[in-house]
Image (cartoon, rainbow, N blue to C red):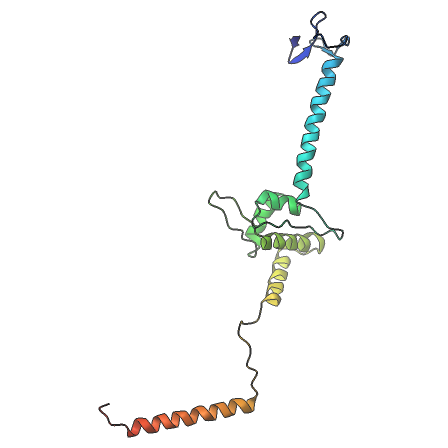
Length: 195
């Protein structure tokens, strides 16, 4: 085989024993002769590369699956990198970084290597922000206010139960405590001073 500007062609008389007769060379330009066999090999190489690229893109897109209603299904993982969140939410990474400066709810911690580590709640916040901005037409300030309102509504009540006693029970309890205080005060006054 001879080499012309990076392209390989076969010369007559130098064919492998298992090869069929060579295809006639094509004049592609005044500098290079390319055989049809070489073109087929290039085509095979490009189609293989495209297949590999397509497989990689499909595997990346499989993390951003949607269910029948159009909602994004978030994989069951503890942490997501910014690139994964970007693919899941179909947003550029720079938009996510910008939103971190605009929305206090979106503050993913950074790992020891400086990589942002989003949790599931962070990804859900990103999707909610995207919905508010892109689908519901909120401005950034309006979306920020809406998220604040939603956070207040979601805030859980205090962990201890509210008193279930009625007013009569509380008055009775207060009266009992006053009696105990009276008894203690009387003992204090009658007790000798040295003790």
